[in-house]
Length: 485
Image (cartoon, rainbow, N blue to C red; front, side, top):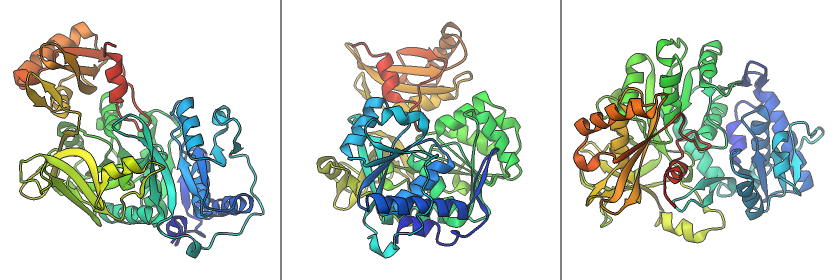
């Protein structure tokens, strides 16, 4: 089945709102009709089996274009709006983009390509693509993500990948037509896209914030009676440190979800304890897995601190040691995954694909342990460990400790070459306090809570840590800021 036919299978004629904000409310029928117009227009002009780009912020235009492109039997290439002009040109060239749907403000970045904006007309194009003409293993979406080399790779997701992951997420989050998601994550990010997919399939609503500030989104939760809120670690750290989040009440809210990196259990417990009537889902995933691989059931949140849980329905997870055997409890190994949600491969890059897809299993590059009950705990990423004074140190462990210190809003720990230690441990923190005020007591705190070989040798303070387009602290950019070339 065409993924878009699957999403709108039960709602294409519904007058219920699909997208809402303070300035508009658009029904399922309106979105579907616009998507079909776009689909028909694309079929008429270039046919199918081409790659068509989207360069747009969250909006009705994004959703309608995304649905129309996939429905037409073409592949949508979703481009991060915060990419550099050079990165955008590289993607457009690599994918031989024929048509680019974009917000008008980005038009200067697409010289020489036929561009479509929200003002473009598609009226009269009503014919659709029969779902039977599109094999389930056709590529529906390409999302570019940075790999371990820093070079962005295009993750190819099929119609079957998207349907499988959407169905699974709906199941464990128990999403229904009554759910209304407050969206603060971009749709060009796989986590943000999964919010769009699951709620459209079930007939729920997506509320788009009209403000870039999270404080405004918090107010919108109550104004629109939202039932769900999703964020990456930095989302929740900003909410706690820069908004009245913990002093507010959200009568309609049913659950929180968190993915996209490690959020310290101390922060999770603080939120879960403040809102005991809301479920808090810790989740783990990858673009290569469409979006989601595992979740921790809220009822074991306090029992299994720092765990990413177990595989979601239809996903099989293992932790393999260096010999390729299942890791024993306490033993470190790599997380590998299998399921219908695992990507078809990296676009135009069979060598990189072969490095991560082996005998049908996706090798995530994340290192973890398992406990006696089969719950998984990430301890780091291949190549991310700091080798200091002969010890192998996980940055995550140090970051967790530092984040518990009053006045630290965010933290990134990394290693730098050092003639004595091999690698020195460097901590870069986000704080509103001056360096000479916060660093001395923080150093004392670290000496009390960390063994000597895990204590940072230097601290740097920034008012705001640079974030990538997914809202996560940009570790590579931060490290380069303080690396002597």
